[in-house]
Length: 588
Image (cartoon, rainbow, N blue to C red; front, side):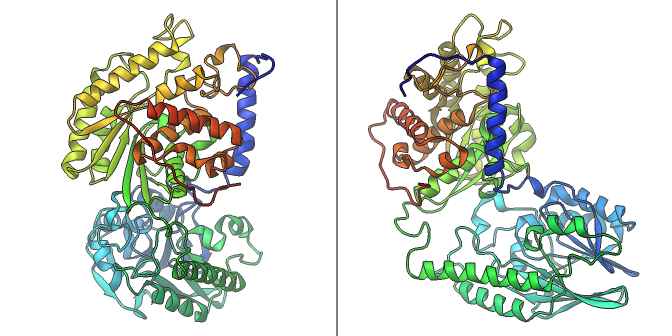
């Protein structure tokens, strides 16, 4: 990347410019809603009569109150149970008075908290018969997600088995269970009459009409009748009388748009039969388009599929979830955040790259800011200790927070985490990431590597990770991300010292804090991981690579970083080639 003149900006100007650029990028990229809103509290409110909303901003939960106790629909995530409990109490009711527990379907985001709610309230748990085995196995019996560790949840005993058309009654309120299978085999849409201001309103709470990514509608051995079930679901939804349009996610019925309009004396915005019909029609069209594509063999990802489904877990910290850049929440809905914090980050980039390469990677992450592998072992063993196919992990950026530069803790904790992972799946493929040198640890006088160089810190970090890999027979190797950063600097693509300004025509791999990665830095990190995990040539992603386009990288910047990643990957000992491929659905 040639430049004509040398033009340096002051560090303060660079910080301001970086923040402005991040803000502009977020206005576009941030529209891809992530999962951080699943845990975000939302004001509890009465929808109509004795029907109330007690869920989070992104996950809908409903309370039906009666003189004989209450009914809760969707316990949501286990971490959301205290939120739901508070919402119930905020409305003036007692959480302990919940007598019946229902769900829309047996996916973790709607029923992972059910075991805890049963324990705290003693409620009777009623589930549609086709979802009972899934619920009682903690998600393992699910036809699609059962093989993905990140989608499992605490199992719970079902007290009442429901069938299509069954009713659930308490204190004069009657809810009817409609089997609307497809999304899950027992997906349930609930309807109930609600008395409000002298009138009766028909409420419909849609289970889910969505054909999720990776669902096979044709030749699905695990669910042969899936397409027929979707067909029956739409027939059912189209004939249900609906005044109050609701669903298992607020996005279904426009929660965020309608809630501010719910005011005394004004028309109830949740009375929306037209919106209900339009939503059902739109979702049916999406289903039919996907079905036709799969039947013709042109469904995304079906043609030239290069591998079977693989579960991939990322363990780490802000160097993975993309702190300091728009990447932090980028495409968060494409990966599973096991901590529920709604991060996208580098794992979301890996998901994007592998999708473009037509690989079926189911990506999860367990990341905590400022922590090393010792923290994940001590605090998150129950979360990460599952049978993954591949695991990529990194430790604290200075090797040891209390003793910068000391590799002992990294070596020991990497060994113990690897032993845990291996005990769950003896075939697991585990790799470490040797991270980059922190500019704030090299250039300022108080930095641990002050007086040395970026090259020296990079070497020290790499040696530590090599020792950690050598200390465990279960760790396959080390991905040299830090050395890829050095290669980008040495080849004139990236500036090596952000403290004296960024040279014209170059990028900074660090963000404004001179510590975390910039979008460019994380992009290069993801390219290295992608190439190492898949054995594919990152240059094949090309100038039309989708995520680079969405994150604001120019075609020249994207291809330059792809070339750096290829060169560094090929320099790794024992590697002789990387396979090229034709990417699916380039951005331009």
